[in-house]
Length: 204
Image (tube, rainbow, N blue to C red; front, side):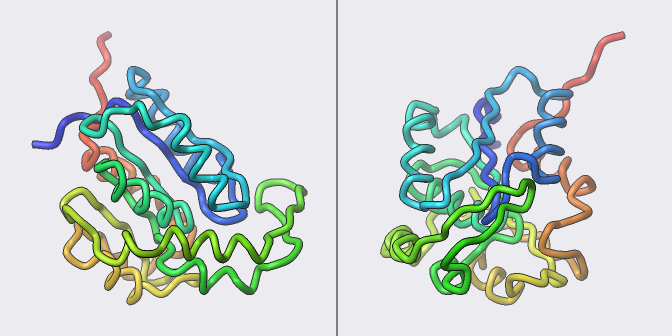
């Protein structure tokens, strides 16, 4: 039986933020049901190298047996890299498989989803993504640590590619859906169950 999670990290996707629907929904669930755990959902910098450096500075002391990460899209790619290095459990929501390939078209000035803030996605960020990808993500270890929710209706990423990348892991393949997983609320209890975070009964 998996040990209960005591530290939970949430990683948003490209151009996203802690204000995303899934991040806010997860934060609200934790606040309501499991305020006893440590929760962190940081705003990630555009640079992949800086993003991972920021994360490791905070989480390196978190014990692997009691820590977990949820990652959406590009955050799912980062979550996989962290899980492979740390031994954590990971929940992946329509995870990016090859962001170095897919994000090349965004080089230049772009805008965040949840604000009017603009930022510049630099060519060097592609090289940073490639550095994260190889060589340690060529083959996943301990597949039982991963739970991927993949929507066939994803309009951004290929569900076939995602499913192949996480073959052997626990996969919930949705017949429809979208990249944002607009129905995430109905999957949230299963996500938390996988992480050993059942809602605690309230007295009254």
